[in-house]
Image (tube, rainbow, N blue to C red; front, top):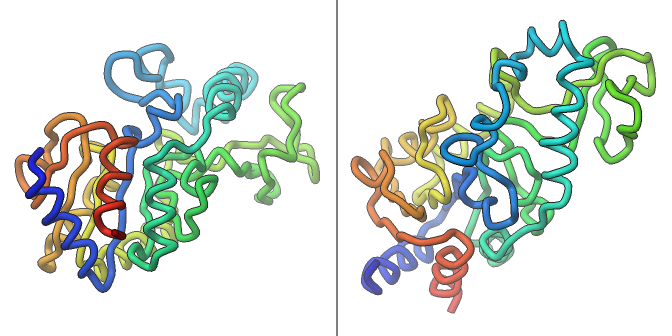
Amino acid sequence: MSNHALENAAHALREARCAMAFTGAGISVESGVPPFRGPGGVWSKYDSGKFEKSYFRRHPDEVWPLLKEIFFDNFGRARPNPAHIALAELEGAGKLAGIVTQNIDGLHQAAGSGVVHEYHGSTRRMQCMTCRRFFDSADIPLETLPPPCPDCGGLLKPDFVFFGEGIPSNVHHAATELAKQAEVCLIIGTGGTVQPAGRIPYVVKSHGGILIEINLYDTEYSYRTSDYFLQGKAGWMTPMLVQAVLE
């Protein structure tokens, strides 16, 4: 990466009337959250078919111990890293209108970001599949699995998108509207391979917006649409960019 690319990217962010961030698994790896795909990813160790919504309905006794181990024991220990914190600082300075994230770990909110559209849901909530009420995950004890709904005793499901489940229309709408307004999209830690989430940066690009990409490796965005590719770890490159914007 050249200093020239960093300076130009910082200038674009500084001048934008509306900027957004689009984040994926790569921003949370440095917080100890494993990616789902690729070597060492969650799906290399667990059968993703068990996280189909229909399978979960039929076999909650089998799936819930896996959910607890992956999403509550492991994710529960994760803390925001400098990349999450830098984005919160950018928002606090009035230079970031919001974040669309594919992550379900809640680390953007933990870092202090206020406008976060969780495209694939969150581990921070659960929903009863019987009475449809929502609960904070922190209020649900996991000594008994599956944990019963506090209100009706029904089956609780973590409020993130399982395989075979659609994206919530309100989140999709909010994310798309933000992308339609954004003049700059900061892509961090994602190659955009998961659809329909991966289309969000293209919405920004379609009306002449600028794409700034921070990733360890080249992606589909790098080859086709990114205006600036800042190669490196999210926890190092994002604070460097934000510092250049705010100085």
